[in-house]
Amino acid sequence: MAKTTSPAPRPKKAAAKIKAAKKPPTKAVKPLQKKSAAKKAAKRRPRKKVTQAEIQEIFDRFAKATPDPKGELEYVNVYTLTVAVVLSAQATDAGVNKATRALFKAANTPKKMLALGEETVRDYIKTIGLYRNKAKNVILLSQKLIDEHGGNVPEDRDALEGLPGVGRKTANVVLNMYFGHPTMAVDTHVFRLANRIGLSSGKNPAEVEEDLLRIIPVEYGIPAHHWLILHGRYICKARKPECQKCIIHDLCKFKDKAPGTPFV
Ligand code: SF4
Image 1 (cartoon, rainbow, N blue to C red):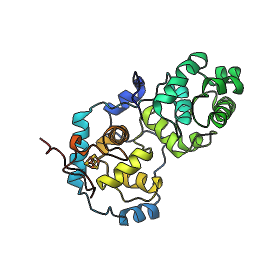
Image 2: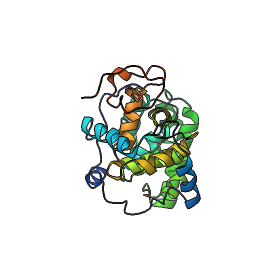
Image 3: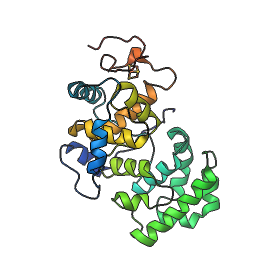
Image 4: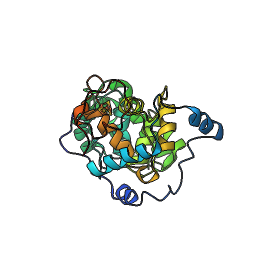
């Protein structure tokens, strides 16, 4: 995915929570794993095991290299963040930003979005894949926010996943980026990277999410999501990973990794 021109500002609320990353989330995020799921996840082992010390080292290096990682979707409030994430399914962040800059100037609240109407929203976002369905969902979710949540985006996983167009991944992004919860949204980059490094041998996003939430050091619960996405997007690319530039080369268990520069 391409770089955007300007990173989205981190809301004060989320930034403050990142500083307090060691504190557990205050409310609303239900434990990810039931006992049986946790047991199953514990049995699932990466093909080559990464030790807990190596996991700590991997995330220490990410933290040193990018102490304050940021997402690349542009938004002005939690509502526009939610809409932007809904629009980003099977699209690049850069492509979404290009369309939403004008859209969010015209409508940055559910009420204003409803006033625009589905047809106009469709016109604003027609450069994004699946735009017809996405425009419909943006209108439906705006209506639901007004009808059931007083026009606010709820800080609650079930309520978020109840919004049209919002699935687990979108809920995880909103809970992490705006509300500061230690969630892990597993997109194509995170899925690939987790399997290559050896952090997970999960066969689907849900399994990878379980594994990552179990093993990532608690102090990195919030920024880890951004580090993995950015590393997968710009370094550990799908076709040609840039192993020679990789800061965790010596720790990565990918059997096909290219030679890299020793970490110093
Ligand atoms: S060494 Fe290569 S395969 Fe392993 S994480 Fe780095 S870029 Fe990806």
